[in-house]
Image (cartoon, rainbow, N blue to C red; front, top):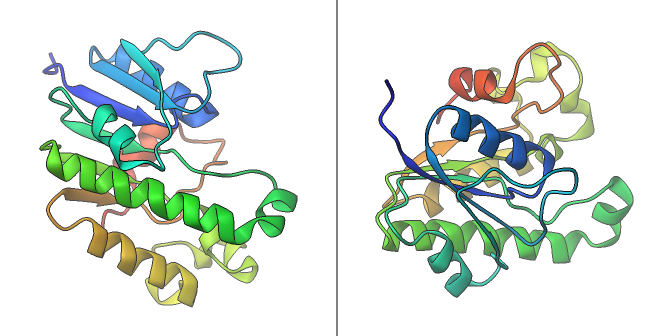
Length: 186
């Protein structure tokens, strides 16, 4: 029997976050979900679901309160390629604020583990094709991806970090929990 953990999933209104909440609940954990939006297709199974703007430090402190042991930070300002290219600076600003504030709030509230997920979008288009361009080949990371990893590592001082670089979301052969178990932790 696994000890019940108190887990926070940010981005819990999105597809991956919602399914991660379901998995943690099925495993017997207490889960708080946080997002700006509620899940679209079914009610969240989270023990608590809060609509918070994680670009604000005070909201992040609220999200991580009450003995949260692990944070799975999936919250992000995102959209299709048209949105990303049209609002690149605003998206970067929003995501930096979310990540920095969530890390600081986690540190202040004594969170033991923090999962920082990234996106294949940090890699140049040429790096997103073929097996030889995966994270395992670290020398093949783009300059942008290496910079993002350095920033993530620097932000995580004081929190035990789990950094995932370029987690391939669309792998039809493995579930998200399977990928999280076998991901390369830096």
